[in-house]
Image 1 (cartoon, rainbow, N blue to C red):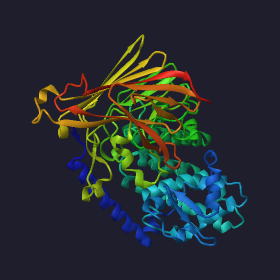
Image 2: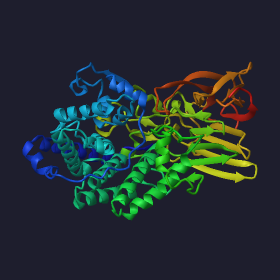
Image 3: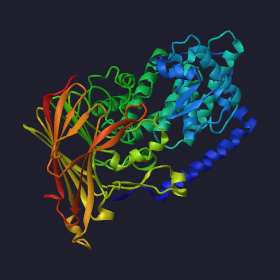
Length: 580
């Protein structure tokens, strides 16, 4: 068990809060804003970046009808009123609202007034918040809004009102200049990479000058070098973060090439590494494995990220990111073999050590509950727990523990305070298939035992076998109470498209994929239960699903090599048993 929070983390976080407070106070003063944001006016040519794929027309129609559904919450806007005049249901809702990431959906609506309605929302925002607002102009929200407004740059420069067009472009330039000064206020996380990309795009698209562009480029190159791991993963260990950063870099690279701007070589090197990482995390017919705050991702996001790099060389071990991948006969299994990320990179992390996802050719079968930013915030903490993953849980506790509510969490954010460290893993590839083995000590400090998982994927991809063991390390000696039993539950969350039914003896289950392919789940660990689960990785509203659960009691002095401290299980292909 490792400590993930240090006194240095607390000191850095406190200093960051102080710097942001001082910055907000300074920007509250009109003379400071007039000086610091000078240069945003004046007539200039615009160079729109490559248009992004259209948004969701159905969500756009709802927005035009006054129903703003963001982060799982809905705000109704009466006809004739402005969304900016109404109180937001929550802070998270307000962050999404001011970030304007819903704007492409509105523009995708088939109603003829979509563009006019979008401009009305933008112009209303300018009248309410265009000068300054510490929340709406905070660095993370500012970067999101700049990125979206740049995507609809031709729209901002449209309409018969010349003054309105100039005000929109002037505000966008001022926001970019504010972001330049605010870059250093952001922690060294993926959010600062996003902000630097947005600022570079603005500098090129709005002709803000080389000083702005180079300042953003230096920060971006430095952060990419520090945060993009050699195997192409992001230091947060989130597959979605890798894909999102790569897609943004691809679009930036296209804009720079169109304007004859040479980018720092580190940006190109990072793109090559990230492409390998995204390729590693692809699973199932489409999408990414759902680990550490990410979901499947949209097809358009992944296609944008991998443009021109579809044939990137594949690999099966991501040692820096902490994952192993086994692929055979069209089946793919990816297992998490590390603890949660440290520092600011762990604010979205999960207690998912030794969890796995499995996708045969017919689609995803075993998954984690996952997450996406469009989900209701009330689910966030629940899906970070070990029980929300296809892993073994001991005494209904997680293998990593979040900082307790209080001043420390308020200062540092929702990161883990302790977690398994180290997580050990190894693999062995043979003619008959691939063996993966990993162990962690996330329960050792509290319960005196370690957890081991072994997985075997047969060469034809039709047989996935596993073994979970609970063992007491020999060097720890006997426990205080050798007779004490430890409750455990091994969970296998099934994709919502999978239909499951138990056998009469409850020692096996029939699983049918959406295409009709059948799989048999078997275990020697006692009765299997079918319980409710929920899937949040698709980006839609939470979807009900099913989980297979094996529960039992383990000996506190066991070695993990025999029952009850060892449970074997298997997923074996049966062939077509249902209709497609």
